[in-house]
Image 1: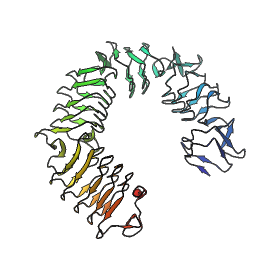
Image 2: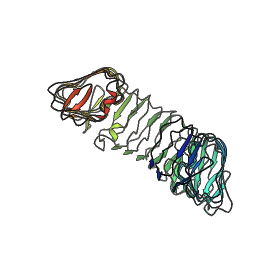
Image 3: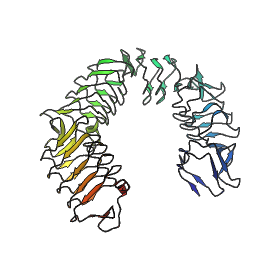
Length: 511
């Protein structure tokens, strides 16, 4: 027997019979009221001790009930704490890890917000990524002095030789100076440290991991020793040594910012979450802007220099104050429209996307983005309201073209043959859609989450309806031309003519 995810959040006890040989990942993730496991003594794979789930030999702790609170002592037979074994146990206030433990898994104690200290015993040789991530009140991690792999100083976790910073407790606040022996900072080592205000990086550091300072909302300054051979800082902003790559703009900095004119690349997440940043000047010479580089800032307008050639996915996403975007002349999106063309998702106030006549790949009409010959509508500004009529040159509505739109009506001309995947997904103000009899293909999730959509007319020309095209809508009336060769309505169900396939989105069609 195999146990797959259990969705009953009200279960307080789970009885596992002798026949169970496998338990899927996250099988009990939704069991927030769970207090204990009871494993049949004849089970060959699993065991329970005091309501906690282990492997048969009680060397691997698999799952601690969600309802646990107070203090907990891991049995002295345990050598491994499994991935997520204690994750989200917010009622846990202290944990005793015995000397038998050698391995602490990924996210093992993540989001245990009641923990304030962690003691790592002598024989632990491996601590997985984010093992203590999200432990908002954790101020100190201490390591047994005889541990051969890890060490701690003032509650900060390092490797044994103090050359790698492994974990900075989330609850620590104020400024921090790294020891001058540190050569690397592990990925996510300082992520979401909301009380950290400044950090000083010594000359010894050669490597800073991915998203090391992501989500540090109070961080106003990253300072690098002038003798560092790999990194540099100017006014508290982190760069590579030659000031050609902007790595991290501290999230707590505010106001306007002028990027140095030596910069060629703005790295992934460089300005992400800098909500106090109101304006940025990007100099001529910048070629590349990384994924989500400016996501979630306070920017209101944006003009990209003509030197920009590459814009990463979601580079300017989730900027609610952004109203105007000017595209560089040489810019072209990668990934068949699923990359840089969509760098402004979630810009709920966006009114205009502008491309000059010199742009070789794109054109704009009334602030709407098209391909150069205006046969493909690529993106409609999310902040626009009211109604919109597509130009008669358009033959295709692209992937996510009207994603999250605030329009209440849309007029699709008879020139259109294709409505792309997710084209109108999340357009919650749309009430009705008339698909013209020129359309042959409607993509997956094309009208998903249009929660006020009540009427759709499907003409005879439509031969392909993508899965979940009308998922999570309020359709009251679905009209299909009786001459449609591919689809029919039967007893309120949308079927293929051959009667074999029932589209999976149908559960949402009729309430």
